[in-house]
Length: 278
View 1 (tube, rainbow, N blue to C red):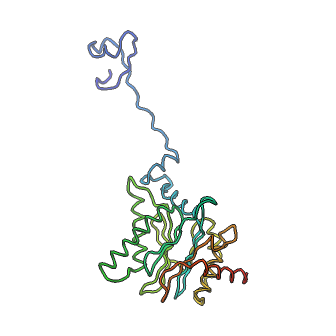
View 2 (tube, one colour):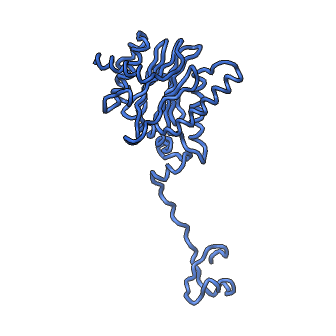
View 3 (spheres, rainbow, N blue to C red):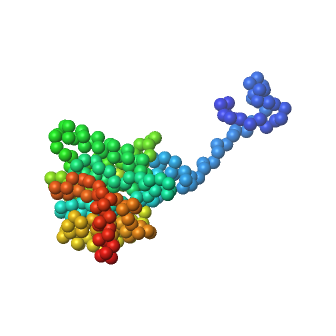
């Protein structure tokens, strides 16, 4: 006998669903509907949100955000005891448009290079500038570069565990100087934070990393101009075309050197010297 509250299917064509309300149950046969079989989850069902783990222990949404960084324009950073240099490739959507900025000044002692979604990088830049202003107003001093980088990593990590949000699709190289010396940090959409002597992110960055690994022992003995040349050589490894002042940008920061972007004339002079040496 079927449960009175169960979903039923009428087996006799002489009775309709309306008859169910006044005909006694003993006058017709009923068949209880079976619950549907559990559906098997495939890979694309584990990447619908950032809260779902796959059976392999992966969060696909975070991996997709990190892939966006790998597809962005290459960015290179290197440092020694006195200076930090950032170099980026500039991309234009077409020949009719200008290239998007990849280098941003945060404060006099710190700046960033980004790779990935430029809009996410611009939003992060505004937040970092706000943090620097708040720290200056509260403590009347410049913020520690390591503390600033940790804030970026913490905000990125929060977006990997909150429903309704998505991971930030931008990777950063944070260059700066404070009382502890020169620093170069890398942040990822996953929330990981790395302290580097030299680093490269973005498309074809593995070639730049290989060049930096071969020349990391030379960093401490280099002047500012030589450090810029080394960064440009590493950036050149990630570019399919020859680099020029129109296709790359460079920023420096260090002792007695506030964060600044090199002007086109200065960059052209360095690139000419680099071409002669090669």
